[in-house]
Length: 133
Image 1 (cartoon, rainbow, N blue to C red):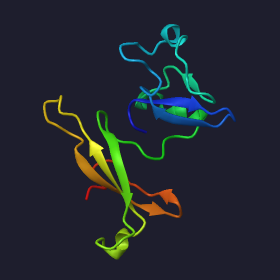
Image 2 (image 1 turned 45 degrees about the vertical axis):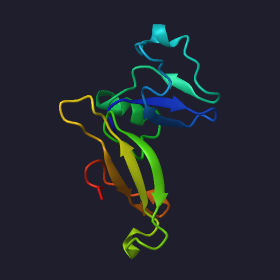
Image 3 (image 1 turned 180 degrees about the vertical axis):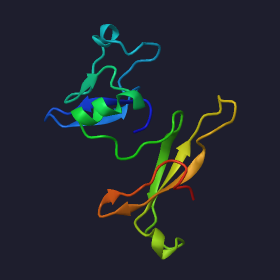
Image 4 (image 1 turned 60 degrees about the vertical axis):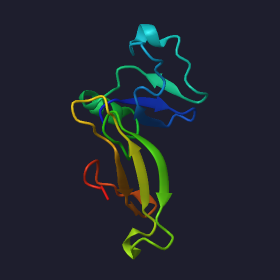
C-alpha cells in the first residue's frame, strides 16, 4: 500500500483505495470537519483518515487495496503497450509508463520509465524501483 492512500467507495458499494489528495482541495486539511464541503464525483464517497501505511489494516478491511501504487510526488504521464516491433518478445503485452517526478526535494526522484508486467489480465508489477527499464 502506498503512503497517501484513501478509501473511496463506488455507488454499488465496492470500495477501492486511491491517492488521498484525489478529492482534497489544495490547502485544506483532510479532517472530517473540513471534508463536509468536499463534493466527491457521483458514485463515490470519501473516507477521512484512511490514509497511509498506518491505516493499511483499515483500508484492507473496508475495501480492495490498490493494485498498483508508486512513491509520493511521482505521477504517471503516459502509458504504452509493447505489442509492436522494437521490443523483445518477453515485453509483449507489458505496459511502459513514463513517470513525472519531483524536483523539489534534496535529490530529484520519480523521473523514470517503469515497466508494468501483466499476467492473466492482472498486473504482476512487483513495486516501485524493481520494475525499471
